[in-house]
Amino acid sequence: MKKIDLTAVPVRRGASYPPPFDAPCQARERKRLGDVHSLSQFGVSLLTLPPGAWSSQRHWHSGEDEFVWVVEGEVTLVTDDGEEILRSGDCAGFRAGEANGHHLINRSAHDAKVLEIGTRGATDRVIYSDADMVAEPEDEFFRHRDGSPYPTI
Image (cartoon, rainbow, N blue to C red; front, side, top):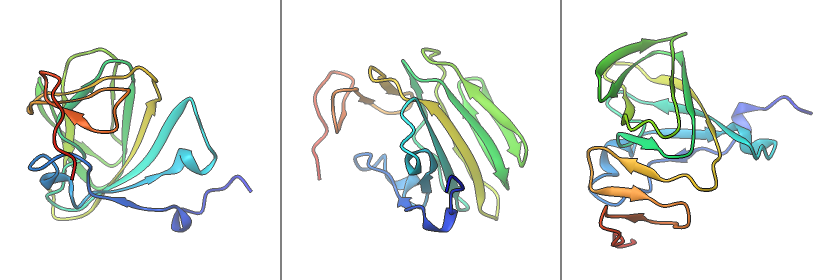
């Protein structure tokens, strides 16, 4: 069957960022829907943000396009250009290589659900706008901008 049973998709909670960058993302929940059918060219996730949770640290990708669509609730999109409210049915896109850090914050009193879609670039480098942190494509850990690794826990 091709229909995805959302109740059967594993939930990934929290974030793998080093402390203290992980704290605002610990309550987030992500279901990797594209992995259910082993999609390899793009990823699709259903993100649930409880009140107060962040989707990620503010970041941009060197080699991946990203697209988000608010399925339910309300989130605040924070970019270098400022803040915008996104409500159910609203969407936003982020082009690979555009150095405009972005993330979502749920400042409402209710859970928000967001569909995240992104290319899976093998050479993608992630740069975090407000933190001394980068994610290199060849690493399974985070580095400082000078290249030195954060300690692994």
